[in-house]
Amino acid sequence: MSKRVGLLTGGGDCPGLNAVIRAAARRSFDRGYEVIGVREGWRGLVEGKHEVLGRREISGLLPRGGTILGTSRTNPYKLDGGVDQVLGHFGDLGLDALVAIGGEDTLGVAARLYAEHELPVVGVPKTIDNDLSATDYTFGFDTAVFICTEAIDRLHTTAESHNRVMVVEVMGRHTGWIAVLSGIAGGADVILIPEQPMPIDDVCTTLRKRHGNGKDFSIVVVSEGYELEGLEDAGEVDQFGHVRLGNRGVGDTLAQQIEDRTGFETRVTVLGHVQRGGSPTPRDRVLATRYGLKAADLVHEGRFGRMAALQGDTIVDVSLAEATAELKTVPPEWFEVARAFFG
Ligand code: F6P
Image (cartoon, rainbow, N blue to C red):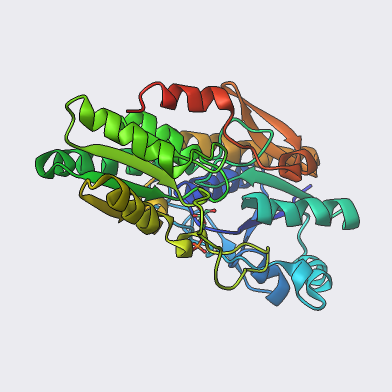
């Protein structure tokens, strides 16, 4: 029996979204299913925005960053009548299933719609932050780490030439995955993440010791969510209750404090949305492709309320509820690898 399958990308974009769309659509076409692209995340189902996807629309997507479907941080649970509109448009479109590609917010909505309304939905774990539970990796993360590592390599050469401390602020929201992995790969001298709140005094002591041992430059990688004394969250929150951590300016404040306390000339680089742009790494293309095929298979088998996940090197499925119950933080043993090279 033929099916109509909806695909939706929500939350912050990241490299690999289009590769998931391509894979899920290709496998669905092979089964004779129709594929509908829902525009701009949950907003598309609230407002009824969609497009029919055929083989031509999904051609050439593998290396392309961003998402051809558009995305948003719309939360139907925060809009008057939002959930009813989602359910209504799902019915009007004649959808049999929905593949929601997103992070904790987008998939949190999917988990609720499944639990409360039996919406036939499956999930695919996306985010550069790598903070979703029940999966070893989300796609998009490897590309972000690659971009940050390259930036750290470049900052090394200029830091060395000028005898400077370079502070590099990276994304990651309330977890330090990007900071830890790119910091290890780039040989950072200090890495600061929300899970391991190293005080500024200790940071300066480490840098002084390093410079005392004959080094004239240092690289400090700081996660945007690192708690620095005196720094407050500011500005509006989005529909999922998140403030924009990038607005806190943790990198700037940290750089100023390091310079004031140590006397070492210090500069800051905030990598920002560069971390989410451009073409996915081969690893992310492959992971996104495997996730897309798995999601299409879950739809075919009618196994809803599930999410494609990576455990070890195997693609499995886990419950959406489990994946979104809590954030996956950086375990101490990962931080210990980084700390072995501090100073
Ligand atoms: O969740 C992905 C992410 O890039 C976070 O690392 C960051 O805090 C946030 O999104 C930035 O959001 P926006 O694109 O809305 O500025």
